[in-house]
Amino acid sequence: MTTIARPPARWPRPFRYVYAANLADSIGYQVGYLALPVLAVSVLGATPGQVGLLAVLSTAAFLLVGLPAGVWVDRSPRRTVLIAADLVRGALYASVPLAWWAGGLTIGQLYAVVLLAGVATVFGDVAAQSFLPELVGRDRLVAANSLLMTSNATVQIGGRGLGGLLVQGLGAPVALALNAVTHLLSALALTRVPPATGGAARGAARPGGFGRQLSEGVRHVLGNPLLRPLAVSLAGINLTVNLMTTMLPVVFLRELGLGAGVLGLFLAAGGAGALLGAVTARPLAARIGHGPMLWLPGAVVAPAGALVALVDRGGWLWLAGLGWLALAWRTGIGNVIGVSLRQQVTPDALLGRMNATFRFLLTGAIAVGAGLAGLLGQYAGPRTSLWIGAAGVALTWLPVFRSPLRTLADPAAPPALER
Image (cartoon, rainbow, N blue to C red; front, side, top):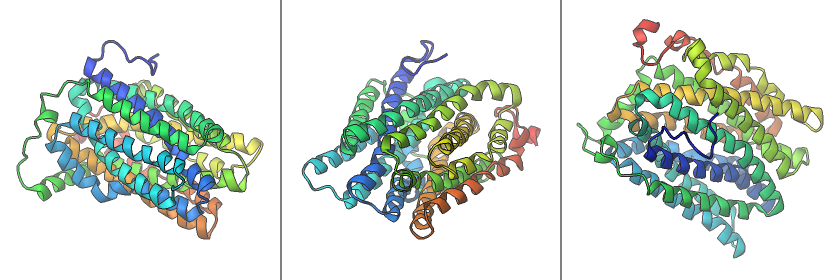
């Protein structure tokens, strides 16, 4: 089994450096994922509405610059974009502990940091997914994505648990200082990747103006019989799951009186599920088909969201953790198979715009879910947000089931053959 510490030697050296950078970024992200809302609730006394707004702003950049970012990434050296994104995020996250130590940290600064860091993440994520086919070749995309997702899921298990312990033992600002360091280490690893010689390096002008190039990416996603239902399903997953995740810190810390350490361990159960999904995605897709693996797991785990909404002390906490693990297993499979499908059916010249369109839709759905969670938590109670999210996530497999993806065996096969 592949470990997170050392990708297989058969992978080209540039991919190994990208793998190391991804690993560093993942560690920082998982620690910060927990530290930011806990810092807002425990240190700054944020209300449920403010926690929801913080989550919205952390993803709002995908709505603001998500689509244009794809055009810019397709015109730019992707390695340079990745390095710049890491340096910006490192500086932004470092400003939080510095302001706290100086006694001047405010919720307004947290809002600004997560918004600007989100802009950097837009460019970094789009460039990373667009760079991968050039690094490993299209015939190895599923294997490469499986390796990356396995690493991310493994880090999610330890990172959120470690984040909870760091926040509880040393304080959330210290955890965010670690987040800043990991982004700087990622940038250092990426400087070892040789400049690309293909489309990712050229940054050549594309035919047509900026608006035409942007619309080409949108049309490619929304007009493709495979990509359109995938985008609708994944956007639904992100919206409904974020109705739950945004209010979990409020439920754990205020309603149940549980500490940040328990919250971190609960979220780490999601990492275990995502790891299981990433590891099993390839063999299951080879046996059942790529298309069925994009809807069948969702149908199987449809009741799992209700277990999360029932979270309480004692045995209910364990059942909720099991439900969270099941939902994450489904997501882990979808990440490997879905991302590989997107990269497989998209020409090189459109990769940045395709990935940006997906990021716009998927992360935009996260922002909408977080905003709705904040409103529901403020005016109807955090539990209401959990229950609405649970009901919605049970239906998100239907768009794929009702599309040509339902029986697609191989993403390299023409869609017409799979209808």
